[in-house]
Length: 201
Image (cartoon, rainbow, N blue to C red; front, side):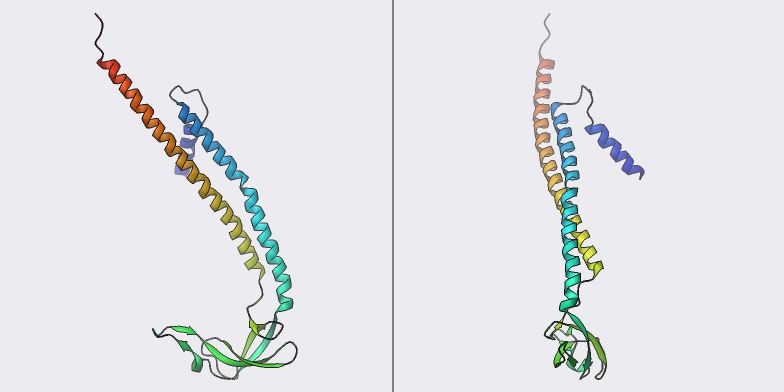
């Protein structure tokens, strides 16, 4: 905390507007560039909030619509899960599946291979989400997922804006530093010529 306060005060002393005779024109230009960068960064808060709000509203709409399109059903396993475990050539498990039977929302019986927990036995039940035709589908969106997506969207906008702004500021400072180095060389050359000039008697 103390180091952060020191860094803040150092930046304030470096970029503040004052009548210090040692400050060059390039120093004042850099101060203006830093101030503009901070103002634009603050202005980017609104697009970030707007992006998060749009994602949140779409997520809430999906929360309300998806449960009507997807319904939970209880499926009965017709075989053990271990007997249909898919294994790759390297010996890693690709997925655990088993044949199950359930009734669709329209009352039709449906039998299909679905993903099941490990060690599931034939005759056990499994909760599935199905679409209007009775096919297995993913569970509907939850509110925590909507909140998480909106926060990620907002932080994504701010992170992108921060990266672009500070990259531009770094490039601008590099250009100013090159100009300062040229000015320093000219000043040292001029001072060297004056010091070597013989004094008039």
